[in-house]
Image (cartoon, rainbow, N blue to C red; front, side):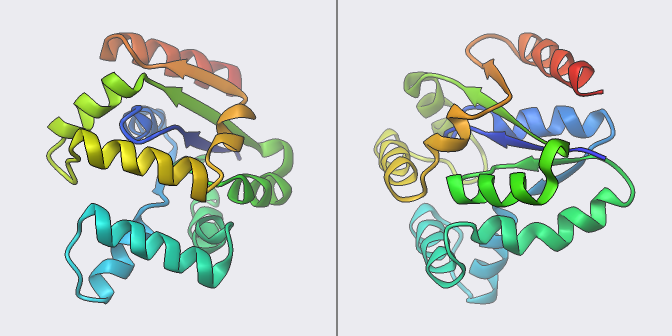
Length: 180
């Protein structure tokens, strides 16, 4: 069984890529669900400020590999029935943790889109929309505070998501064929 992690900046199209993998039989695990669950448990509103605060608190408590560690039981349980796609790997430490744990069965797909394209997408999304200022602030925080660039640089596959959904789908299907 394989574990494929999707990496990229906010609005690049990670969730769409993960959904395409899911349509090919992969079980999708969204790392951000841990944040959402913690926000709900604390009775907070789901917004960019609370999400960032909870992400930072979890990383303070569990280290920079927090999301990989906290999601490991879900990944291992899902691997008993199918391949897994991780929606939203963030830190270099998460990458190293999962690479050490799964070895050659672990692959990374980087999804890239320009800031202009990503910010427009983030402003239009129905769940957790971001203004251009919020998006730029999130970019900076993710690059500076979560070591996000390492997994992107070490990706086994890269997708440019500046064109159509059909083009994105073709790229994902090409990668899935190579993984099989």
